[in-house]
Image (tube, rainbow, N blue to C red; front, side, top):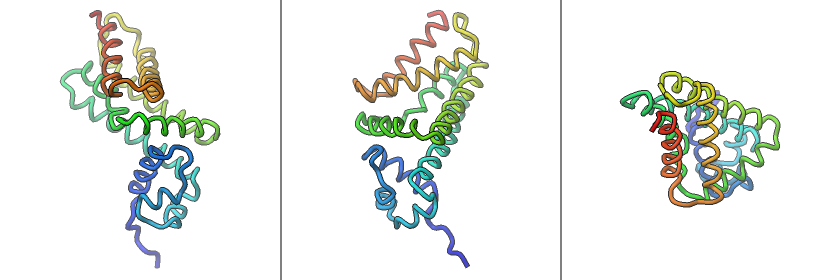
Length: 190
């Protein structure tokens, strides 16, 4: 009879995200196991390989971020505030420039692997689709249509985070809020 899982995938994936933030693409399954307080065999048995671990982490990140975006939008007072709140949730946990640089370095490595690159495309697509859903409920008199607005705002999220990770000035959350507000205000005619 198999033993029940006492260590959740979520715990292992959280450990992986922390380790990537500290070590970048040079992390190992052993590093993840140590951070999670489990054996290397537990992590390897669950995900098979470092690539399998990264695939699972990308899927989980996509699902979690879309869920957080929708929750933030639903809690807002109006559709524009909801769109803004949803956009600002995307990188709300990323506050350390060095950690951001390590994640960016991992992104570079992920882009080399066709399967991980395809999962990243799904993650970006899920983000854009969520922004599109929210943009459809927003009236922006001087803005583009919802499809272009979603593409521009999604690109803004990723561009600001990438720029901040290599040239950190101030807090990422503040920079993202300033830039999102600048675009939304221009589209509202302010």
